[in-house]
Image (cartoon, rainbow, N blue to C red; front, top):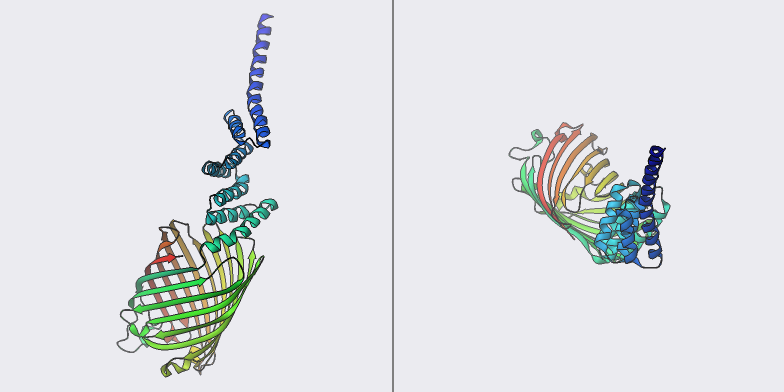
Length: 419
């Protein structure tokens, strides 16, 4: 009998100890909630952490620890806890990213805040509340982000080698004409001012490429545009005028003036459809190039999707020409797909495929061409503003006129600065 009683007492003691163990974090939890409700965030944080240390390890305790840290202004610690919450509990990743956005915004880092809110929106397809909150934050942030850099732009330089500068079959070129050359290229673009409101903008660019062994093919162009930019919720509209002037082989080549329009439909905050129309009136700047005069129309449709540091783009492009010389008056269709991974710093890459058809129906003997281009770029971002790029590009053009069938390989190494 004593043996049975002893066993029962031991079992009861075990159950009592277990109950006390569960009661301890429960008491800390209740004390923490009460302190938080009364705005006593330091006491709440202490009790939430005590509950965690006593064995309460679910997402709720980590979330409330992070919120308490945020309320106390311990933003670095709050960011670490929110990040841990997202890592350990995948179902909480959208909420964690949203709160990381709040931390970044409180610290004054609008760009990081935007990135976290976009991520929160993407990770919450079944949580309309998070999506609504993230969208509101993004709308509030937009003026801050744009006013932080009223003018946007980039400047870059590249050097490399092109094995078919003339874009022709070597057998069809005049004696002594080379098809390959080292090259250097520079470009600069600028656009603005952006202030988060509708208004008139300016867009300018400069481009030049020099072939050291084939200077007859050197090119340059300067372009400027003025347009009106209007935004309304998920829509964006642009319309304006533009003009450009170019050179070829050191001689004045063409002059263009025209109009353009653009419609953008944002699909949430991670995707968009972009439609552009461009009309150019083209004139020659030298009688040697008289055949290029006429007009050109372009329709450009793009779908883009972004997530984290990734981007994918699908593009269809249609070009029609009405020029004096039918040899430079093709109708073209182009389809391309490219994918890239570009983190703020470190290594990234881009790869793409492009297919273009060209019809020269007005020639005495009509000609058709199919151009296939594959390319890949390895990037290294030193900072958010400086990047190095190594690009490899191959192309194959198949023409019904064999003299226009060619292969091309281009390798370049460049440096890019954005602002």
